[in-house]
Image 1 (cartoon, rainbow, N blue to C red):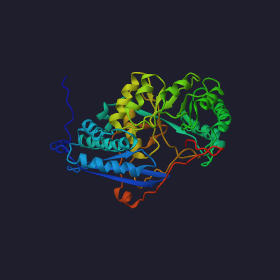
Image 2: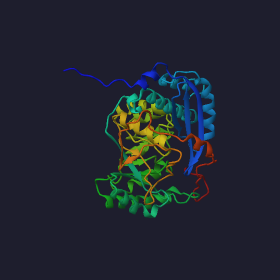
Image 3: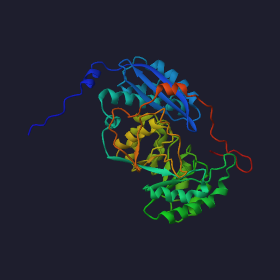
Length: 402
């Protein structure tokens, strides 16, 4: 038998006669829905450009400053050398790493993958090792500000087909939050959600690192084993030993890592088997280059990815491609947009082409690159708004985490 392959795409051949060189990095920090999105365009001398996104919400101006530094380093560089350019940017200063610099590297790295995919006429996941799955499962969330209707919202999501649902404690008050006062009623809500939805549903809760070790343990111990399939960010993550202490007091699987900005941040948690789900954020961790390395480290310890995806269509697209290309994947966070559940403006005018869910999953991407288009003229019309996360206080007046 003689095997034949399709003729090469003439446009691809034409593009590859000259490797694209980076000519400009252009950031747009624009208010979309209820927050700013920092989207970044990387241009090349071939006319091919790519889009990326930074995830450091509330500190976009700092990231733009880092991007200005990096732009001078990258001008004239081969856009195909993504891994080497990542190293160049990371090691270009004595004080390497950190959330600001990594958020800037993330946006550039994602855009470079978009460029290379377009130049080679393949989806980005093909650059990451190829296809592991035909579709990307997702999880949906109830509204954090509508605690009293959580059970009804969860039942609505279940009726729409979701088999993994995340709930929240009551975050309707953006001034005062006393963790201890919320523990009992939130545990009761979780027990009721489990009773209503049955044993076939995966249920998690996001505490957004608002608890102490003792508070998190008290919360978990108020529910029968098996009530929750994961607890997300119950305490702050700077000290792995604190999570190890909490692990000794509960058997609920941990989902953590959305704040981590490198594989080194993940390393102690992975190597010491502290957690079970990695909330890796491609727009903060260092882009797709770093996220794939985190996935490989996680696979060796049977930790699945559950990517953090709170931003816009570029973050979603990059996360979908990552999910397709790695073996150890659980669910991708999405915003649903009905019945009062967690949602943000989907910005159709700004992103005329973006990934769309097919029910509770994303289908395999087929477009070259990321598969997202940006209306740049509209981006130029939008404005930036200064925004800070809520500064919550306990009832005694002391500051606590948002």
